[in-house]
Image 1 (cartoon, one colour):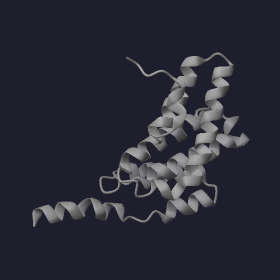
Image 2: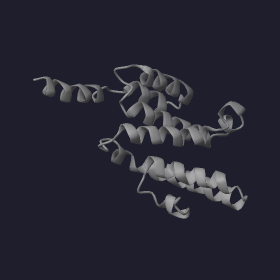
Image 3: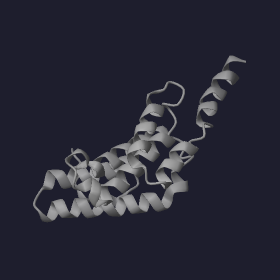
Image 4: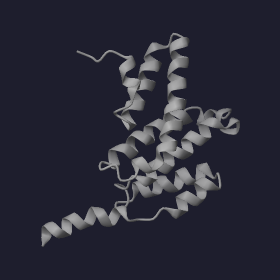
Length: 153
């Protein structure tokens, strides 16, 4: 009986609906969405859910593409934050229950991350390029970006 209860507990937490985050994201209220997702991430009953991390990643990614945010020093690392939250999402979505539903987002994020990595390479910033490619494999381990660098011995 106790084993059955333990099996149901994580599933119950995963059933939380994040329509409020979706509405904020669609309405392009990215800062509010990130703040609200952070509150979910801090709560004990929802901190293991992957979707708040996904919405944070998606909002940071959108912010990294908009001039009104990229010109603000407070958001200069928005692209890095998008990748960081994408990695956290992937760690929380162990069974890939949600990952495959957002294939378009992963493709878009991969393209942006790959472009940034190659830009760093062109500028001779090899350690920054490596970190960029490593972040890509953090949220998508099967990503080919890791093959650009030799693995450590």
